[in-house]
Length: 112
Image (cartoon, rainbow, N blue to C red; front, side, top):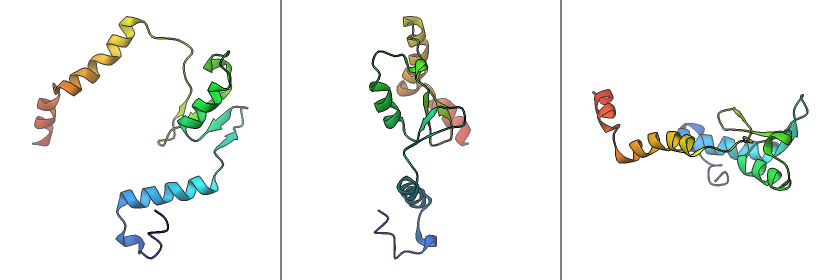
């Protein structure tokens, strides 16, 4: 994508195109992982973090001093615990409601 945009002025780019271009440039110049000041291995993508965890199948994620940073800048580590059936249902219910469209009325009221 970067090669196609070389001859364009920045003012001609959409915000989405500019965001993609900046992300590509940062991926080229930044390392994919680094050590933070507390001794944690920091990954810049969830996929790289998952690959690292898969190298230690006998350890829980909490035993591995690593995390990844989301695009919004949040530090994320996988949990050691597993959800109970009640917990899974509690988390799945809002997703199902959204998929069914129960929130459409709220969105209609907000659009007024």
